[in-house]
Length: 317
Image (cartoon, rainbow, N blue to C red; front, side, top):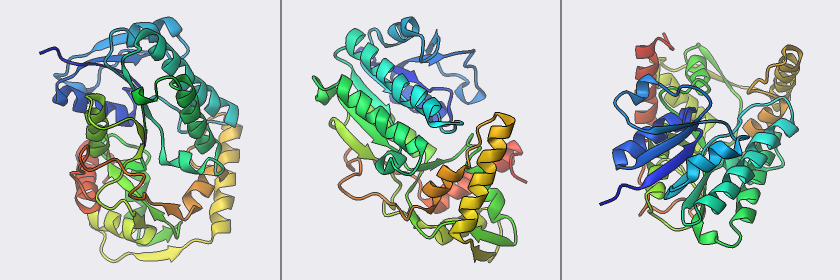
């Protein structure tokens, strides 16, 4: 039996690292796009083909997708100094990959890894660009909507992630700031990767879906930080609600400092608006069907496993 060939952009990112491992475990042949040598200790023992290039390199993208049964576009920016930069990568890069895949791998399933933020495009340039990327993919696949799958993951955490490491560092201090009163869906990276790998190998129908762990209704920030505190061994920290005005002020200050240095920070005034948004839960109508995906790790187990990994690697004392 012929092994399916899956072409992947964004393989060297946090989710991409785990996605390649999940695809290999599922029995796929894998071809990835990478600017540089993609060697990584997490991939020891895995076999895949590498096409050298970027999202701007149409010749490389053509080599990437030719002969593929599935194309997964997981590349994208999560931080940038301005909206134009976000759009250049997240919208225009998606359009380019989708267009080339439609032309050179017309029978392939195209999976766009978007973000739950795309549901609230007004909140930030990042969210706006992810919604624009979805629209670009839909336009390219207007004549073949049965080939297009769009996945919106919520907040993803797990081994090799430096962004959510801040949650666990915050949970170690005696006084823990509460920066949101809303609800937030979560997912462990291994579960997100496994779900996307299942879709890549033909499970499920075309359409737009969101991912979550066993609590798609999400977690209040107090519960989330309490679980993080428990995972790092901090007993009964004191939680102090932070005024939204202070969070917005901190976001503006962080963004201004980033512009002065010419380096895009993750936390900005727009990111503050995403954090303060009250509803990052997932409804049953949005969720990927249980016949395709069943989460393995809940928040308690996932946080505990993640903290153990951080400590093993020396990322968290």
